[in-house]
Amino acid sequence: MKRAILVLSFLGLLGLASALSGVSAYSVTTHGTSVAYHSGLLPRVVVGLWGVFLLLLAFGIHVRSMASYWGGWVLLACSCAWLLYAALPVILASEPPPPTWLLMASVAAFVLGAALVFAYWGRWWRRQLAYFRGSHG
Image (cartoon, rainbow, N blue to C red):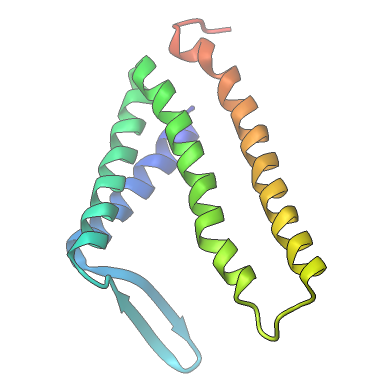
């Protein structure tokens, strides 16, 4: 669980830094540096709240709070939902438009993949319940 705490803390701090600075993406290429900013106040607030949620989740895992166990499920569900929300429009807007059967197969494969990811990590997270109940194995 130490790795989970470390990763969640890092991502939480990164979210807070993004919300406070307004920077949403930063990249360095052979053509120079590119900085993208949040489009307005709402995305900054959402990113900041997500960062706070991740930091609270990391602390809750550290103190073995059952609320953090359920927060882990929220994190997993939101992550899979965001994956579908961000990727499906890209698949559907591909140019040139693929045949309908290929488009439907792509969407089905992507949804199935997200479901498998959720099932894998959900199974792993469910096994962590003993950690939150105080059992040390």
